[in-house]
Image (cartoon, rainbow, N blue to C red; front, top):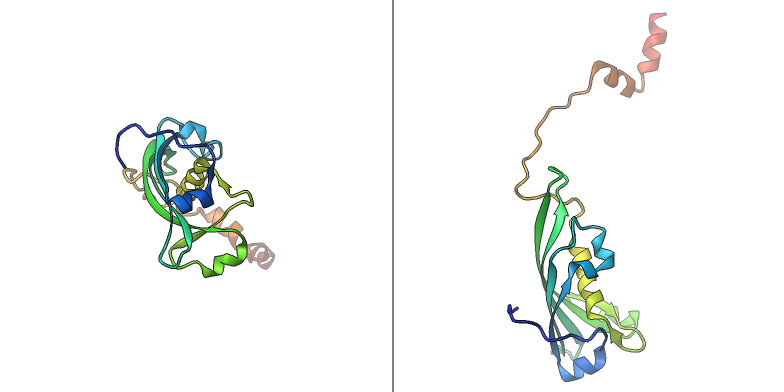
Length: 172
């Protein structure tokens, strides 16, 4: 992906026409514009750069190859500090007219069910892939590991024992 200004990518593309023409688009989307992703971020400054390449493979299956490069601001769950998670991914989406075609996709393809009108939204494809790239528990690679021994107290151990109540009866 080049650092040159990207040409304007249409908000909506006709997937089947783009496949037939083997079109490629390069664009940028501000993180602030991604409403579904924003809630998982620790700030919305920055952008995602992407390339969409439509085509057909050797088996004549239509696809869109999506490459994304972004730095997502997240909150480390170990240190509670903000850090940038670099995301570089490439995904090949097999374009399907109906769910029945999913079984025919080769290994390495993810299914993308194209609406009946054939229109896909590049910004939604990018946002979907970034949401999937989010870690379940964000931890900065620079965060110090917390290594403490939190041994339970005698009272906590007694309360946790299923026989703790019986020990009181035994003494009577």
